[in-house]
Each structure stands twice: as structure tokens, then as C-alpha cells.
Length: 220
Image (cartoon, rainbow, N blue to C red; front, side, top):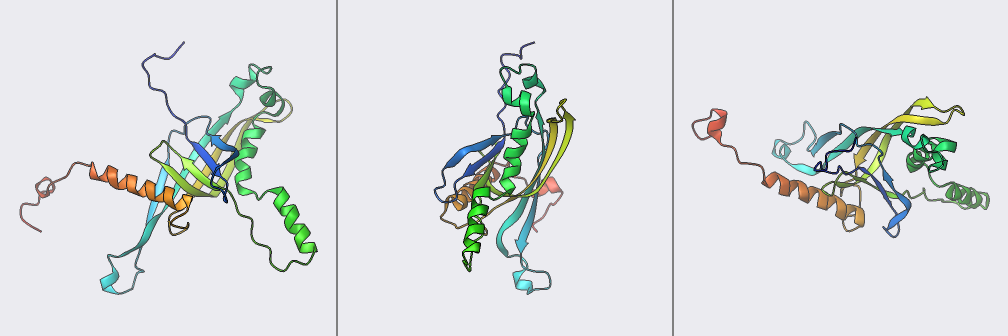
């Protein structure tokens, strides 16, 4: 049965990977969540003066809040397996490619590891840690956030006869990278500022309340 023709098309969320040097989208750097999660949990922790500090500092903010995002995404190859000739990768490997693309976000490139090993064998004294791509969590055009993946777990729920996973739930924990984490003038810092400014514009649209609505009749 076809959907009602007037129903809106639901956009998908995902992660976009930018080259850390050029800040351009990397090859195969757009990872789309197959199904839009039903829930998205966000936690904000204020950055303020430390407890026990000067009373004059109690209302001061030292930077943007630390924001974390958690979500559960489902990946399922069942529909693709109905037409194996059209989806040869799914028929041969199940959802291994999709899982690998997400897991690769936490791995330094093997070529870089090999290069660092070679440098170490040659006696190089200092080898810089591997620079990861800049990950942008995208949840509509109003939320494009530079993030770091902090938690990642996979529950594989079904398998084909060759034990390739064909259905899984992926739990992601993300930490939003603010201008306290990224250079202000770089692409990541600029995207964060756009995100914060968008919050401020939306907050300004919120209808103003009155003290009488709170049962307060006189001035504070």
C-alpha cells in the first residue's frame, strides 16, 4: 500500500566526515542512518565557576555547556535480501559494510599506523597522534554539530546462514565539540557558532511570559 500522497517526506539523520586538513567532505564520508531513531537524548552541563569559589563568580559562565547526545539507530538488511541481484553486498555480507563504516570512525587509518610504525623503527623521537576526520552530526539543517564519538555499542540481533549480521541496533554517544574544543576561526568552530546562534534565534521566538501567570502580583 502506498503512503498518502500528501504525507511529508521525512529527512534522515547522519554523520558527515570532513578532511581535517581541507575541511572538505571525504570520499564515502556521508553516513546516513537507515531509520530515523524515535528518540534523541541530549544532556547539557553548564560550565560555571567552581563550587566553593568567590560569591561574585557564582553567576559567571566560563564557556558553552558540555552537550552530549545519545541515540539508538537500527540497521536492517531484510528488505535488501529480498532482491539479492540488486543488492549483492547485502546478499554476500549482510550489514557488515554499514557497521564497519560506523566503527571506522573510532579507528586511525591502518596506513597511518603502518607509517608511524616505520617511523618508529627508523628512530623518530616524536610521532604525532593521528588526526581524525572532523565528524558532523547532522539532524536537519538546524542542527549540524561537530562531535566526537565517546560511546559506541552494537547489538547484532539476526544473522544469515553464513553468520553475517543482517539486523543490529547501534547505540551512539556523542559529545558536541564547542569553541572550547576547536579553533574559533576553523570550520568546526564556525559550525558550532552557527549552531549556538540558531539556538538564540529560536529562543527569541518563544512567547514571553508574565509574572502574573506565575501568581506573582508585585515586583520582585
